[in-house]
Image 1: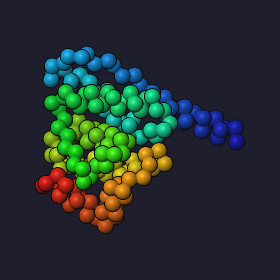
Image 2 (image 1 turned 30 degrees about the horizontal axis):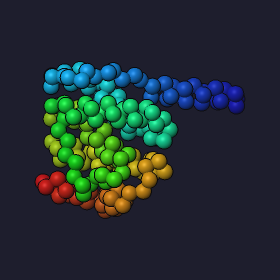
Image 3 (image 1 turned 135 degrees about the vertical axis):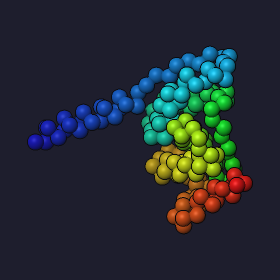
Length: 165
C-alpha cells in the first residue's frame, strides 16, 4: 500500500513539474503593435508561472519569464497598466512582478475589464503571492498594510483611491 501511494505521489509531482516547463519564443527587436497579439498565449503562460512558482525555486526560469513579460508589456497595445505607489511596493521586485503578471493575465482573459477591476484583481493576486512566498519575497510594509485593509473588507476602496477613481 505504501509503495502504491509513493508511486502515485511521484506521478503527481512529476506532472506538476512538467506543467511548469515551457519554452518562450524569441521576440524580434522591431515589431508592429499588431505583432504582439501572437504572443498572448506565451504571456499567459509566463503570468501563470510567475504567480504560482516560488521565485527562489527556479530563478533562471523566473527571470526569463519576467524579462519576457516586461518586454511584451513595453510594446503591446492590448494591456494598459496602472502602477500606483500606494498599492505596489516599488522596492520589492517580486511583488511588483506579481502585480504586473496578475493585471496582465486578467486583462488578456477579460478584454473588456476596466483598469479598476484589473487593479483590484492584481492587488488580490499580489497579496496571495506575498502570503504564499513571503520567505522568498521578503517582508513588505505596504503589503502588510494592504492585507490589513483586505481583512477589514475595504481593500477595494483603498485601490480605487490609489488609482484616483
